[in-house]
Image (cartoon, rainbow, N blue to C red):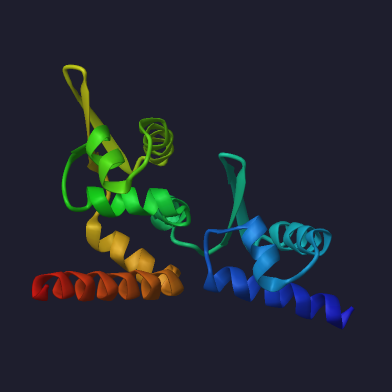
Length: 175
């Protein structure tokens, strides 16, 4: 019984350190069986220690005390494309073509992710004739805080990419 409790405590601690983690990612990161994780999540949810939400076929898991206002941002930044779109929109309004071009994605892919972000109420869209202009519906400082607090590994990756990009630009200036 002690082993089951320590596994459950380990799962709960990992969820607290990674709020908004997907079920699949939790299984992979902890290297546990699907059935084992399902069982312990069920007990944790019955004990009112975690909450889970299913969106777009993925199950997201949060500690019960998780700050509700961050929940949509956590979900969005857990998807690479949506994270990139939010970062682009934090710079200012963009239309779908601009987003597709900057991220080198198809219009259909961008449209799919924009619908997901709109469902999470993280973007606003305004029609100007046939064109749709998207803008952020979140505080940029909050986005930075969520990335740095709840996804520190992600923050490190972004910082590394920024440094690489700056070195690359600096190298081009010297050519």
